[in-house]
Length: 504
Image (cartoon, rainbow, N blue to C red; front, side, top):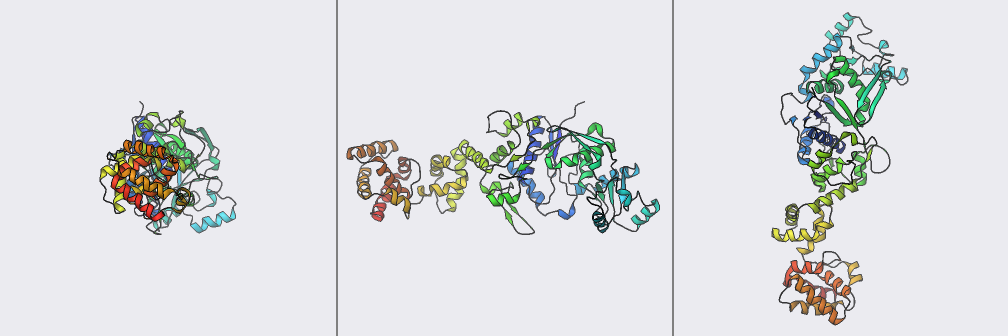
């Protein structure tokens, strides 16, 4: 009987969630929803030394912001918990004991110093079938010695016993049949007596089995561990429930070679975390996509196309469209460059797609923060005129503050280029024309002013450029009569006369 699709995203709470992890979670989510399945949120915190306070809450908050909702797991509940590995100690020990009893694992007492000495003695030392009999473990010590060492409280680890000369096949959805010989694998540590916790390798396999995971979708960096996981499934006799693997392409730095890192973001000025992160140890603050002004939909859309292509020219996708079209077989094997400028393009497109009212609600607090108490209707009008000129809502104020605040100075370069020796005279005449207009609607202003320019045989460009400088203080903004329509007759004349007085 075909099993219900169940996937998991299982981060470690060792710091902020990297954007590569977000993409992995997104692909798991899309795959689960496309196939009518569930996605589980599990916390892999078996490495207690690397635990960072606040990291787990940060990860959960990130997914809430992105709109990726899990079906069960930490903070979501479910009937296969607990979903935090540190709370599952009692479960793992049973499986460690099973492997030991069946001779598929062994206890090793080697100290860090002994291991370092062996590494110096043997070039490219690896704890495996060739070297394990040189070491201090339950394969080389008598049963009585092993028992005594444990009773004395000596710290030990449990290692998986890997037989050499075996070809392990990993049937990967993206990469096809990946074959690795066990000769290159070491006897991985599965359990540590020091904290009575399993390592990632054992906990991961046991949890995936007990939580009925059908597909493991993760980053390419985990591919080398896949053969070990296949061998562990076999060791437990779980071949029939072994999940299908899919190893996603790496996210690469925008320039040069190598995996995307936080340093690349710092160097080139873009975030690599979904939310701003405050490091509790160093006090350092790392920027986040949310705080930079990105919409969550834009981030999701951008990430979805980093390593996956639907085979069409379509670039803008809703979450529902992504779910409908997502197919793991269309994921690339090659790494995907993190083209952060494209992320800005997506955000710009989402600004255009959203209604003026939506953008105005985002922009209003910025207006208030600059000391302006403007009606929402006015803010919406400004947004309508200006939103197509920015990539982020927080860029709006710098290009449209003149709608709310009259210029206190005039840009020198623009003055030099646009304010001619005859501009003051023309603007004085224009003020008289505008003052005489009873119907100050945009269309009526335009018709009367253009008629006046034509009658006077003035150059339209000269008049409009000087007019813009007078009202805005710079050479920016929408059409002049959009501006005067918003400002109204009184404010337009006030600004025009001040410019004449100041610029002469």
